[in-house]
Length: 606
Image (tube, rainbow, N blue to C red; front, side, top):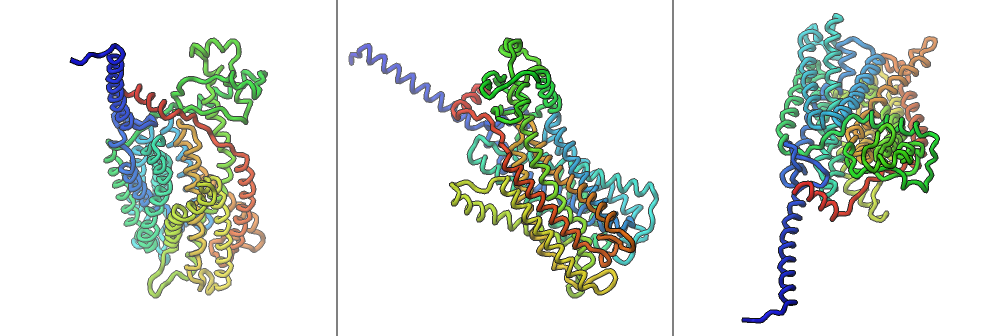
């Protein structure tokens, strides 16, 4: 028998303990790695397992859902201006204004969906409910058109206009189209954020996939509208409106069914509650301490909680809006209550809660500068279509529907997403220390390209008027519109994809859907501003015997001057955007050490 000294015996025990500890920790590490680190849950409310939930399995399902829902929506939107003129009997200016208002309302409803999602329902339930409303609206529109509006039979094309309609029938039509607006508007910002939720930022690979998701999301949106702009656009232009609307309703129904099929695979985040009281608390608490002087050397006296349950990750204190810092300043009376965690939120707010308000305030100037871009974008659904309808759209015996020209916009989006991701961004990154174009830089580029699109549209209109062959048409081919559609598509890749990434990334964790809704709302206000500009232009230009710049008969107007006006407004907006972008300071989330994050996750889940 071998004799062991006490020291060797002790060392042996230590080595044995070390092996056991290593084995336990390895098991725990594997368990930690099997879960997401962003706090997401599965459909039963349990911590989400990485291999069983989310990633591209859920992401691809959401992309297909987005494509089908977009096909359904644009089956109505793409030719709505023609439906209003041919079936409802409106003139060009009124139809363009009504389309702008309707489209604006679509995106205003995105705020309703974002509020319900972030506050109460969560993104999954909100998407499901508003998709059901979209199906209901499309079904009602199909029935109303078939039973009441398309009379006499075969009306609604260029030759045969439909008769007058009763107030009840018109009310049914507007109820249907605004149900479509409510359904798609409430669904759209939440599906974008819900798709991004399927990727864990704590994992490097999934983090890269999350960035790529926004580009593919916008690509899916455009590919979904491609079928609407070509096939459905053709049939609707040939007065087969009911067929087009029923196809849209079927696509929306299929999208809803597919979305529900992924229920057990998705990752979920719990809603953070109504943000309005939190925002009001910051302003009230700051006003209560308006006499308190908070210097830059007193940041250590600002109150913060250990864990901010309402908004996810904590946000680090930033300079700017120093008045709001008073809400987090601990007076001598509040110091003991803060340590006991029994503070009154109307008197004392955590730094993260204050920074939430600062974050939204910083986003507003950038957001405002994107509205003029949306004015340019909305021309595709209104004046571009009217311009195309007054051009030579024939290839032999086949007549191209004017709304189908937007397929060049869609193809441009697809091409420029590939060019940006595979060529331009890697090229910039190689020359800029592995840093590609920022979201703000891309949005600025989008403004410049949109300005070029308006100039192109104005030049085309100038030559269209020169080649007028009768009172209502022109010999200029409709394919002269191709450059303006391509330029708008290129600008979308830089502006709208950049917007989605920017607002989603810069919004606090408890307001991610609101961040996406900001992008949608800029489109909404762009449509309303477009309607306002058209009204002002017509008011000023209709003097004496002049019919104005955008009359019912475009050959007697000056649509080219309208496009040049939009280009000038975009140039002014670009100058303001540059100033706002230079002053912007990004949000700073608190990032824990990787080992600490793993241990926290371990303690929560083991």
